[in-house]
Length: 97
View 1 (tube, rainbow, N blue to C red):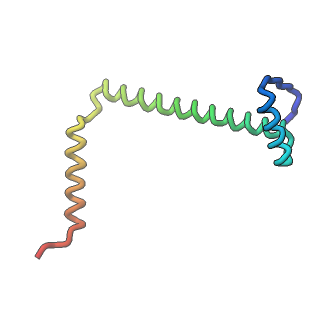
View 2 (tube, rainbow, N blue to C red):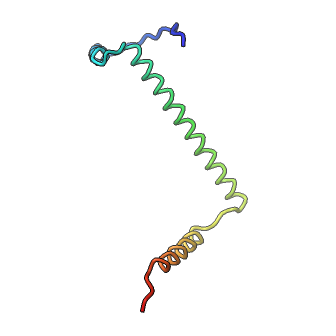
């Protein structure tokens, strides 16, 4: 990838000094570390956006199902799973003499 763009930024002198010392201690150019940090930031932002889009689509689908009457009440779901738990308990309990 061509490195033709220049990026200028302002920061505190102490932060610059600490960063440059850390970069030198890691035997890596400061520009390489900054590129990696930028790539990681962009990737995190893309992942966050993708997740937000996924959640939005799920919520929209759920709302559409609710509007179409394709839903069950909390009581119905609770009763179904109470029955499943009871059936599972019955299969796990040893027979009584």
